[in-house]
Image (tube, rainbow, N blue to C red; front, top):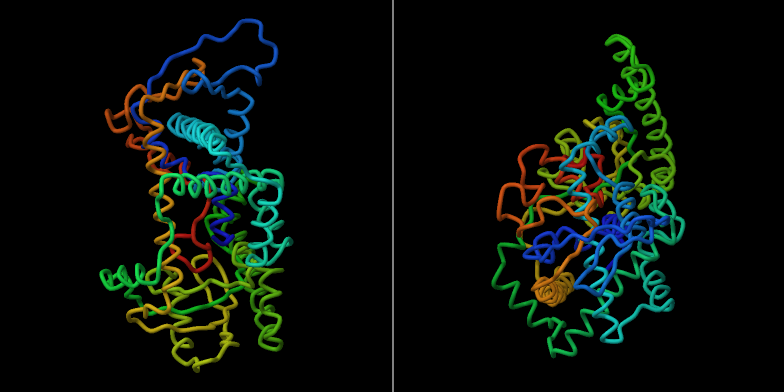
Length: 430
């Protein structure tokens, strides 16, 4: 398990199993309402939820998780006013509330069962996990940049790592107790590969890095209107042209620098790129395909990729700035892979890890299924999530994410981890 940017975002949002729980622990539950005690001064100490009559979740604990979700929501809108308006969506509010309780219920039940198996996470466990993976994301400085971009403190991040480590250790302990094998041999992986060869067909792909100078017209327009709500269309058009011109000039100056001094490319990506996620890794976009890349970006890189010589690790810096729907890119092409089937030797280790992960997930899913049987959830009346009187899918209102009205925003709330592909030349990232 490596701490990639997507992984960091997943950990940062602490949504490892929240969306799965919507269809497991929260299905078929027994609900009741507890009336609040009058005259309680400290609301954070009040009970928000009691699980199975024994585990109490306080309002303070609820608020902490709820606020963490709000802080990292990916609503697909730009600007504070737009976000404020989106958060008034009743369906969205209910989705966030359900996600909050899902997280709290899962954590509480996991902690209870982990304690029963004498499973815990020590400071040494946390340090070992972080030390092993930090180098893969560029060290502590890179991690600090990610946490800052996600609005997360080091303490919050450490707690989320502890949660992840606890899940892994509990699954391993449970599997050992029940004599369930979690390892995958080379022979197992080879057998899967032989039976699913079509899965390992790959399209033509190009490895590239970029330094992005973002200039999205819609975002510039929104920013201009926020600064001056009375701006005319002509005013906004001039602002778009001005900023695009500045970004293009900055890209051209950076291109001139890297053409003269190619060794500076990664440093400039870290220092200047508006794509913070890839900038941490020197602008590395990994392998792109025609289906995943912006069309203009793909047209710019495919020709130079065909010209790369085998073993050319330095790659080729494109002599012109590349313009895409996201802005202006200084691009280096570093690899090419023709269409065809990936040999087993190239995927063996990754395949073994994926198959082992599936085994661990199967153990966890079985545990989650057992926990939902007869679970009793006693909510404070003002916090009871709407539509949870029946299992999800039993009726049109039982799951806000399935209600047509504003369903897209509800889905975005469930994807609050923000682990979308890098925004630069990838179609789905913009």
